[in-house]
Amino acid sequence: MKNGLARVDYCLNKLQILLDKPAKQKNPALWLYQNNARTPMFMLEALAKLYGGIHNKKIFAKVKTDLKLLEDAIGQIDYYDAFAKEFLLDKNMPATITNYLQAQSREKIQSLNEILMERKWLGEGNIRMEKIRKKLAKADWQKEKEDIKSIQQFYITAINKILEFINQKDFQFTNVENDLHEFRRMLRWLSIYPQALQGCIQLSKPKTAVPKYLTKYLTKTITGSAYNVMPDAVDQQYFLLLDQTRFYALSWMIAEMGNLKDGGLKAEVIKEAILQTSKANEKTALANAYKLAGAGQLTIKQIFATAGNINKTYCKEKNLESLITGIAVVKK
Image (cartoon, rainbow, N blue to C red; front, side):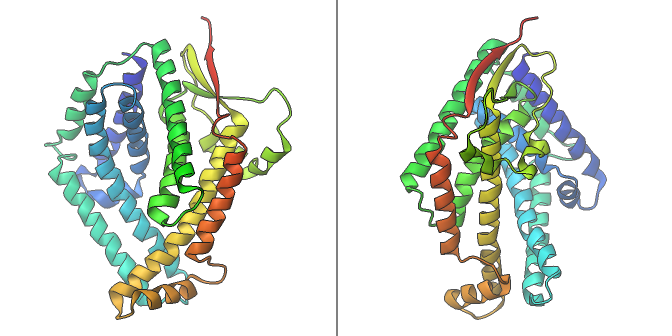
């Protein structure tokens, strides 16, 4: 089995195990959400995205669509459930808002249950995984050397798309979902691919002292994160190398953009709840949302301005352009 197919097969087996267990549950969607089924879905979506950019675009587009439908559905559950749980601990948060979010969470769980049944992901009639495996078996999987070269080129293309995106925005964000979240999502894929590729990407440690302007990214949280430890290389011979310090900087950026995004979404989800449970207009709802979000809550404009300034610094340092250091070959 070629390395590429083996990586996908490994993640499919992980997901299959999770899909088999809730088949007899009264609420399979809730079980999958609570048991982190989103992680193998992310890994598979990453591989479909990557290999679809290398070969057999149509095959991987179909697979990615199937997986994204599930992953997005779990994401919607998490969105409302996480805020509902947070707000339950806030004595100043009106019960109408928390109740609304809990109701939305239940609705999203039901939506996922419907997808699981309609798309035949569960039970004896489970044919979705079988269809995916058959599609992937027909793909033009490459030998190891060509595979790594293709992955390197894919990374270069992905980085260029990110730079093009941020340059078009001129570091000016105006929308949480389409600007801030999308930018973070593009960055995040660069950190998900190494985990999904199971060891063929490794970090190259700096041979000289780390420049002072990069030390701000090297926090204990970042350098000690399990997500920044590459999977074992096993018996591979060719490796794509990423600069360790720049990868840490990427991880820091993803976390920072995530914090800003969550701050913006917190005000947005409170506003949504107010609009849906009262007669307030949008302006009044947003003003009340900021108050309920608590002290230290940034306005949307402040969040966008902060994100823009951070990105200016990050891009000025050429961190993305310096991320890839080359391909290494281990002789056997």
